[in-house]
Image (cartoon, rainbow, N blue to C red; front, side, top):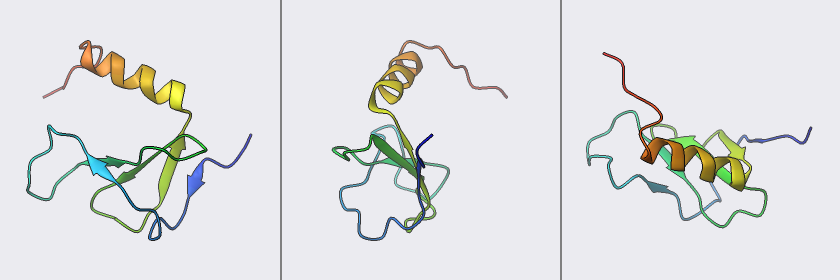
Length: 75
């Protein structure tokens, strides 16, 4: 199994947060589009990494499931 972790993301440019994320610091994920190995995902509170790289097809399936209400918040 190939390594799916990028330990230092300092040189990687173009990270974005969800449009549903607020401007305040918090528990947000950032993703990077156009990476050749898949979709890197990192914690916005740690902009230098690490990042986990998900296969593009798997990430797209996850996002579609979230949008369809497949995951509910627990209180």
